[in-house]
Amino acid sequence: MTETSIEADADGPGSRLARAERLMAQKAYEPAHALCMEALAADPQAAGAWFLLGVLAADHDNPGKAAELFGKAASLDLDDPRAPAQLARCLIALNRRDEALTQAQVAAGRGPADALTLDTLGVVYSRAGLHDRAIGYFEAAFAREPRHASFAYNLAASRQFSGDFDGAETAYAQALALDPDLHRAWSSRVQLRRQTSEANFLPELEARFSAADSAEARLHLGHALAKTHEDLGDFAQALDWLIAAKAAKGRQVGYDPRADAELFAAAQATFPPGTAALGHRSDRPIFVVGLPRTGTTLVDRILSSHPQVASAGELTNFGLVLKRMTGSPGAFVLDETTLEAAGDLDLRKAGEAYLKSVEALVSGSGRFIDKMPLNFVYAGLIHRALPDARIICLRRHPMDACLSNFRQLFATGFSYYDYAYDLAHTGAYYGGFDRLVAHWRDVLPADRFTELAYEDLVADQEAETRRLLDFCGLDFDPRCLAFHENTAPVATASSVQVRSPIYATSIGRWRRYGPGLAPLRQALEAAGVQVED
Image (cartoon, rainbow, N blue to C red):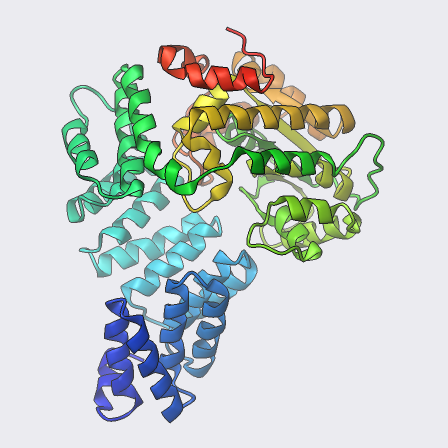
């Protein structure tokens, strides 16, 4: 129902909904809610009222309730594409991917849509990993509302993931021209290309950082400044900016290292020595795990360049299967309680459920890669659920690995990486990771779990590629050496790097930062990690 149509009913529910929609846009939720309830009292079938109540629930971070309300609206008005589009967005947030894509198709089939609905569909397809499909919706949204900076930003990000870096640069520039305060566009634009002394944004970034009034803005702008100084060869300045960028956000999240220590201990307990793996027999999955920024995307691209292997992207499916089967309380999928309860599950059924959950992503019976770094926590449970699956764990020099995590601008809504706001916390987290991987090395079969050092892959790409293919039971294929020619989208922080051949310039990067990394080294040594110079 459009505003024009609801305004026409000046004394009825339509008038109330027109006012409610205006109030909702102003974040005046209480009077908007009251008007919606009045409209429903007059007409319980008023789809517009159900839709606006869905918007209210979504704005209050309640995607479950919002999905219910948008579903009601979508069933009452079979012409309006807005409700199924917003329903799809809620479902993707709830990790119900297949249902989300079904609703996105419903919305697309309802005919012409407004710019916000087109952008919403782009977001759904992007979060589902279908970036090639998302681009068309983002382009259409921005074409309809070319003064909307967020639409330009979404288009830029989708182009970047798809390897269209020139198109991404153009769209980031358009977003910032429309809204110079769009801080996430600054960090994304600077990451896209190497900054030079002749072409950089230092003066504007410094001014904006000084004026920034939120931890989120300082985080993005500070990362952009750090990346610029690193490109210019001033690593001490880069580190200073990283520390300044993360300080306020780190205080805000209040990370407690003990929580991850308990998580790692619970993970280790899921596979004590001598545990039998009696799960579902399938060798289709290849899990690529490890700390972020240690080569997981690179290995994914190498293996998925093989004609018999497809990349399913970074999936949360295995963890979600465990969460749903255990019924453990709490909002987090990965937590100590779920790990403890998962040990008592019928893990053969968990393996079957996982494979069923990925059918829409990897149709057929071929091999596929699940490249979720955090799955290193689940390695024992993965082997128990899918004893024929391969697990490849990436390793990297601890200083380089930790620095790369500290340098990374993780999604701030994803609390699993909150350790990376502080150098000492990052070192302590690495220590826990190192001990857990050592346990997996001791208890899991060598033909099902292997480790790969990033440095070894860079030093001898062909030998390590052959070893990985042999580990996975695959014949050598020369296309795996030309992984950078793979045109599939990449929606990770390595979306730029993996479009180029392997390079060694990031090895030993930590040495360039000098004494500023002393807190990191001390934390690693305190955690029992040997740091070799």
